[in-house]
Amino acid sequence: MDTMTAEKTRAGTTTWQIDPQHSEVGFEVAHMMFAKVRGRFDDFAGKITLGAEGAIEDSRVDAEVQIASIDTGQAQRDEHLRSPDFFDVESFPTLTFASTSVQPTGDGDLRVTGNLTIHGVTREVELLVSQTGSGVDPWGNERAGFTGETVIDRRNFDLTWNQALETGGILVGNDVKIRLEIQAILQNA
Image (cartoon, rainbow, N blue to C red; front, side, top):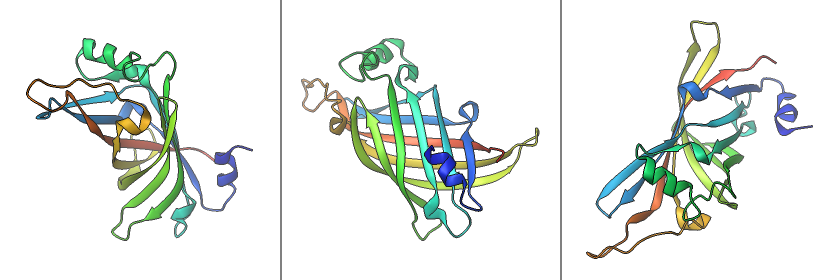
């Protein structure tokens, strides 16, 4: 039995499918020590299982991102990011996240802890997540919105390529801020 099915058996649990057409998985990283490069991944999917009211700790998030869909707005840079210098999409085509814990922070947000796998390396990360609202769309689908953020050190995932600058410092920052803007659609039980 898969995890999602097992969790659906608990009364009041709901399953939501991430809508990639109305969501964004984005990132930003320092460039040349004084600027930022922003980008996104265009091909991703995932499910959110929300625990019953009062049992938010029963919630779960599972997502997969196709690394080849990276888009920073500059084709040459995107090709370099797909290469063995960075993501090596031929060997490691996906990025995955599987939550291990969902806890309220006390201020209405959630701390979602889970295993992030990039470049064949899995590390535990924490996302700070906020639910931004919910409602019914014009086609009768119930939707919920979420935002999330975390910062990772790319070196922890064996993404170590860099170049020293003549003026000192490095070309690509090590800290990567990951931003999520998610809309999810309630699935029929």
